[in-house]
Amino acid sequence: MTVDKKKLQPLLWSVVAAWRADDQDLQRHTDALDVFLGERTVEEVALELLDEISQLTTRVRAAEKQLQEVANA
Image 1 (cartoon, rainbow, N blue to C red):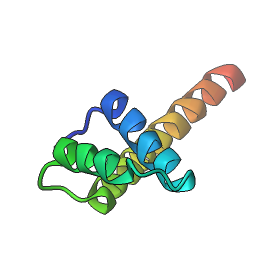
Image 2 (tube, helix red, strand yellow):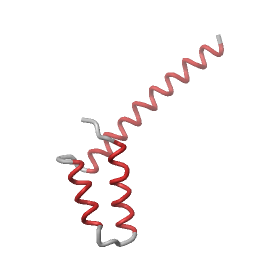
Image 3 (cartoon, one colour):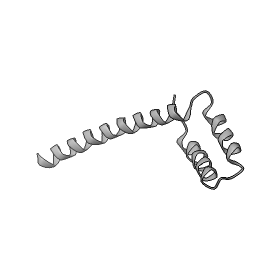
Image 4 (cartoon, rainbow, N blue to C red):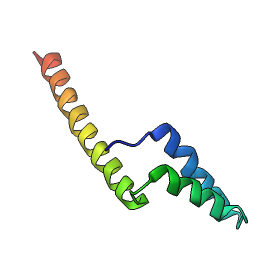
């Protein structure tokens, strides 16, 4: 299951900002993040994102290798 990163990012930053500021709205921001995530935990989403980054890194390295081979041909 994929996560909408454009919606996730501001929710995460609002939680972080509220936590850093010791804001009384921390619970409201956390609740909004929980509603967005549904049954998933922040940790599960983080692991999904790390896996996605790993896959993208592999694809970029493969493309770089192909470009290097073309450049050296």
